[in-house]
Length: 257
Image (cartoon, rainbow, N blue to C red; front, side, top):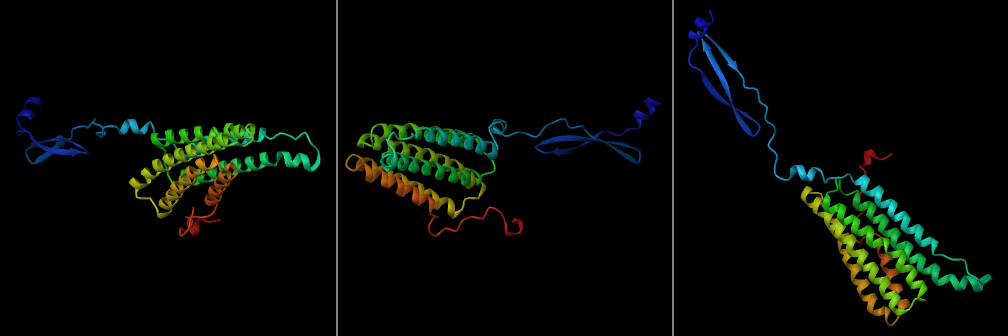
C-alpha cells in the first residue's frame, strides 16, 4: 500500500517563503486532484544588527541614575554644612566673625542647589540613559564633589586671591562636566526628534556661565570679593527663567491632578 501511494505522487514542487529576513521553502505535493502543502518549520531568529546586543546591556533607566545622583548631591551639601563652626566671640562680634563663612556657604549651597534642579529637569528629558550619559553623569558628580574641599580651602586661606581663583576654577570644571552631560542627552534627543528650543537656549546659558567664570579668575587676583560677586551673579542667572522661552509642561493639561 505504501509503495502504491508513493507511486501516485507527482514530482515535488517548491515555492519560496520569506520569514522575516530569511527565505525558506514550502513543499507542495500533488496527489491526483488534491494538493497538500508541507510547511517547513522555521527555527531561525531575527537577524541582529551588529552592536545591538552590546548597546542593550549599557542602557539604564533615568530613574536609577537620578536616584544615585540625588544621594551624592545630598552628601555634598551635608559635608559643606559640617564646615560651619560656632564662633568663639559672643554677641554681634561673633556673628560678624562668621559672616564671611556664611556668605561663602550660601554661594556654594546655591551653586549645588541650582545644579541639582537643572540636573532633575535634564534627566527627565530622556527616557533612557546610555553609556555616554552614565559616564558623563559620573564625571559631573566627581567635579561637583570637589566643591566642599575648595570651599573649605577658601575659608582657611581667609579668601585670598589664589584661593578664590582656585574656587572659581572648580566651578568652571563643574560647568564643563555638566555641559558634557547636557550634550550627551541632547544627542539622544536629537536622534529621537525631541530636541526643543528650550534645550538650545539653556545650552547657550551654560556657555555664558563658563564665560563669566573665566572672567572671574583673573579678577580674583585683583579683587577677590568682586570675583565672588560674579559667581553669585551666575547663580542668579540660572535661577531666573530663560528669556524668551516658555517653561515646558511636564504633563498634558488633561493629565494634571
